Length: 118
Length: 111
Image (cartoon, rainbow over all chains, first blue to last red; front, side, top):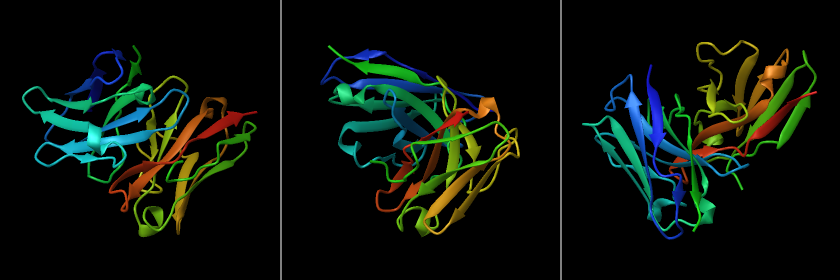
């Protein structure tokens, strides 16, 4: 059973770049689509984007200009970078896997809270 | 404003049945894309509840069921239990946005 674990700084300053990593265990990173999803405090879920190890990443159009998702197959990890952050980017960030490009998300990581504040 | 529309809240007494609607459009649910449902218990990550419109993953009780028709989908929960109190989200794919979309979420309260 695949397990996912997010890691990265819990506090980022405005205008800087948010960087998170998701470590995959119990499965091969070359087998699934890897996704990032976020949830602002008290609000709903927002899909950020996804990547397959041998394909180009896909991004939410509302975030596309600021987002980069990449895969490191040697470390069984994938990463998220979100540039020029503001307080509106404060959220719990989840990584999740999907078997197919437009499929369901399962499993999810436990999530990590990232706060944007000076 | 979410692409998929859900009621903000629903409630029901233990043992009763509730349904949660998820309304989309011709570029997502109406275009034939599958709908998936997630349950988020307080303080935890979302968990897959229904996939492919009406399929339950292993371990999800038969009390939970999904359906889809036209531009809408529904999640039904029968025999409500206290542990069902959670937020529920629908999710699909939108061809206009070329990406995944979620409903705004529905908070289920057990009376």
